[in-house]
Image (cartoon, rainbow, N blue to C red; front, side, top):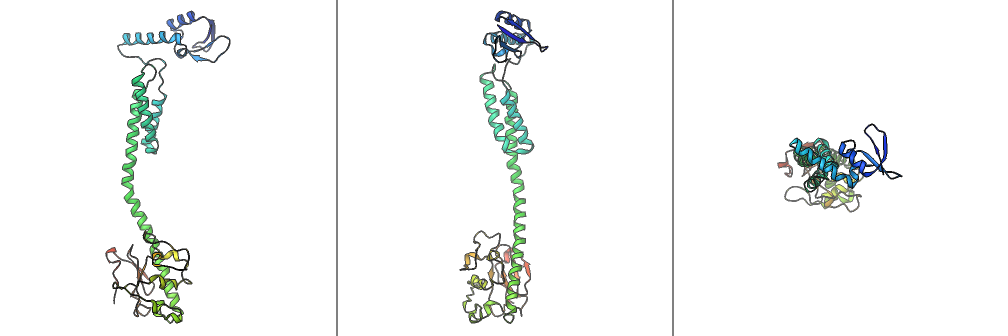
Length: 300
């Protein structure tokens, strides 16, 4: 015996299975009507009663013949197809591949189910729309990334160049501060007996000293940290945490040494950045030069 909730929201019954079948045939009960067995149990849809599914299927087939087009199968599940469509729309609007990939997966699964079991699963059109939108959103993400990456790269390089220039200004100021206590001379022009590094100079054929780290280490009291000796855009060097045992691997900036590199020759080049082309003059000023000339020493 069964009880039925009608379209008016009222409860009818109890009635037998034969009477329930008759109501289905008369259209008084459809596949979505709520039904339960007398004496307890949960309310379920009439489609959930196996004895009624044959009647519903026959009614669907009759509607197909009468209407000349296939009527939707009663009780079709299309939740996965709808999910795919929603995820596909989201991937197109704002989330890109984050929801695009699930939209593609759900769409293909829903479409495959609908093809295999059309009486059980519906929404094949929604599934197709879902995974198509998922593909579009997925590939649009990569297109947008490809368009914006160069701009982001340029912005990053610009920011690093500005930071590098600031570091070079601190280095130039440190040399000038050190020179105040050493008759206007820089460390590489002052003997080691007086706290300089004159005897440790080793200028190379390009005009830059091979022992730049040694000369910079003398400025430990004037420079806030050895960190600033590495250009932010230099991936070949490692920042030092302390001044102890500072080495060339911890220094990006190339240093020029010589008797004419001092405050008496303010336009002389003191150091350069091989990454951004920055130049420190002996007067402490910093100049940006084209990269093609960044490693060229200046002799005046």
